[in-house]
Amino acid sequence: MWNQIYNPLNNAALSTIAAAIPVVSLLIMIASGRVKAHIAAIIAVIITNLITIFIFTMPAGMSIRASVLGIVTGFFPIGWIVLNVIFLYQVTVATGRFELLKRAIGGVTEDRRLQLLLVAFSFGAFFEGASGFGTPVAITGAVLIGLGFSPLAASGLSLIANTAPVAYGALGTPILGLASVTGLDPYILGAMVGRQLPFFSLIVPFWVVWAFAGWRGMKDVWPAILVTGISFAVPQFVISNYINPWIVDIGASLISMGALILFLKVWQPKQLWLSPELRGHDPSAAQMQKATPLDKTPLSQSELWSALLPWIIVCIVMLIWGNGAFKTWANSIFTWNYAVPDLHQMINKMPPVAAKPTAEGAVFAFTYLSFTGTGMLIAAIISGILMGVGPGRLLTEYGRTIRLCAISLITISAMLAIGTLTRLSGVDATLGLAFAATGVLYPFFGTLLGWLGVALTGSDTASNILFGNLQKITSQQIGLSPILMAAANSSGGVMGKMIDAQSIVVASTATRWYGHEGTILRFVFWHSIVLACLVGVLVTLQAYVWPFTALVLH
Image 1 (cartoon, rainbow, N blue to C red):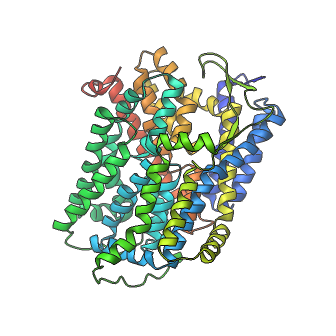
Image 2: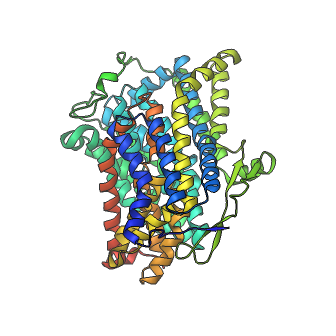
Image 3: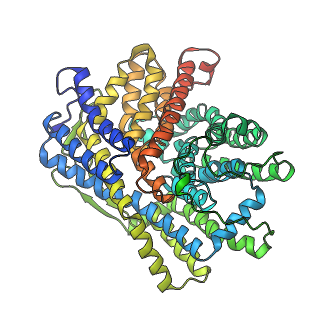
């Protein structure tokens, strides 16, 4: 057995600096734009191994095994989702169905700001609720680039929009993970998150349009933005507090999409915003494909159904794949669990991160059928067959998709190697303990701890599992509600989703803007920090200031 060590240099500040080196190195290399993302990720994996072995004293064999486990986990399930989402997109383009979808969306509105609300925010929230784990950014990024948005607008704005729904993603998986490590009731945790995020469900639609079109561009469509935000935020609060945390995103996104579409039947902006580029300097504009003029001929009923068919199939399949009963059935038949030798149950998480020494699992669960990516592949095949694509052509398109995504898949796997290794070595926990030592300011910095966890791991679920119990223990020690701070970990974490390296690579792959991950990171970075700080301010008010304290569950 090896026990995690959280202060290996016997100096909290120096140990924290050492723990930050892997992620800081990775972000600097990506943001510089001088090192390609897959090379940066590989270098960061090597740096992380050196830090864990020589500073955190993790046995070299364990460190290497943890890295390999992360690499495999990076492909299954994350890379597997991206590959098959892009495959579906390729098939819809090849069959001409995507052109019909563009006409269908253009029939709702030609205004780019409103298309952004409909696709990136509301439509993306549905896929976050149904499947999560990179699916919404992959789909909305691909749709927006197909609609003619610039690569930076399509990727960066998809990342910003995919925030408010994240805490309830994949049918409430982050809430389940949080409950599992804290021992708190998932219904109460889900309700508390539902008393934090609706504020940001109102803010984020305004924020996305502002980031795209500027203040004046946002001001001109404020009624539609308000309808989008309210029709998402109110159901988000009601469902999370009075029904359950599993269907929050599904219900809120469907209501939001419906409300926006109905509103646009009676209201349109006085002046249409037709530019697909970001306001101001857009370095991706040179990489834009020349958009063909939009055919404004109204779609017939059959053409409309033909355009929507692949996405209806995806929605149905994703709802099935996200269902707990289906997962249980699929995993009981198609499961291969590989406990990594000399790693599984051989590492103890130690106090104060855990209440007592707790063995860490290291199992690769090859639950092939229940993988979200498998559902996406099945949806793509069914869609292709119904659109008249033969098996040979489907195979050809799949081979082309693999070639398109190869470098990105390597990058995603390397990113997961870093996340897995920092979790098993205790490097993440060292950073967490630094946040936990902030005393009266803990509600603010504890929220940022959730942000850091998602930025490091790429997953609100993983961040909740990593830091959830630490939040509970620390809040009890300083007299705060453990439910408040556990929920804050998840709510703050959603703002870290847009800067985690894995999501950025997914976005660059979906928009085919390979090699520009640094530009995307630089664009979204300050949006992420400012929004995370705003969540921290809200949680601080809930901790200390009436009437916000009345929202806190105990």
